[in-house]
Image 1 (cartoon, rainbow, N blue to C red):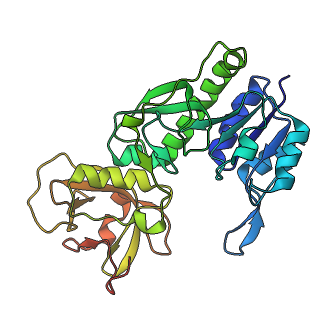
Image 2: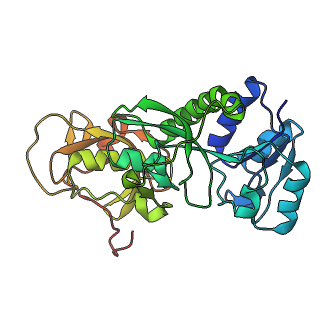
Length: 316
């Protein structure tokens, strides 16, 4: 079995690891982010990848920085044939990139060179793309700039959200790695440089990016809501209370115009006016409440109230 190291952190990475394991590719060493405070008690909690490795008795390292010399020395001692990363959360320095004979490979959740960076899944939905995919690339010192070994594509429906898309891409990525790794190691797949003229960059999202502004076309509002869930979460304020907007769709019927953000109740359905058109909110969560289907709770809302991206004191 080929000796390799896997670097990853969230659930996305464990989906990929499951598929590698089924194909008899199990890493000798797993590297993941350090334990982080989680939940109301802020208890230190291992990453999903750390939990996956621990359940299988696989040696796991959790470096605060991959630039740490002790960490690099441990990798050199292991002498892996290749290192595979997927949603790891740290940029690898040249001291690590140079260690494996066949290089450091990264599974990226976009069709490179489009949507490089930290949030490709959300960015592709925000842009209203009809297609996305995954790329297996050989890493260099740039941000997702290395040559591409192989890609897989998938069509995008108008209804899929970031959470479901993330898992779908993880499964697609697992298939891509399993079918590509042996041909790559044998020299049958040659990495091809990316076309820099087509490159786009995504940034790390913040909680404030979830605020929904209905003073935009309905299609853009819908894409924003599905891109922001489950994190950082789409939200807006109604009568001073913050509400999470969990699912929505473009409202296809005609409706009388009014103020962007204005709520209309139509046959128990919650319709919110946009600058152009309207969206139907399908699932909502009031502050300190539980998620609810709007069709079952619309009677609790006041028709004519206006959703705003800001609270009454102007805070997001």
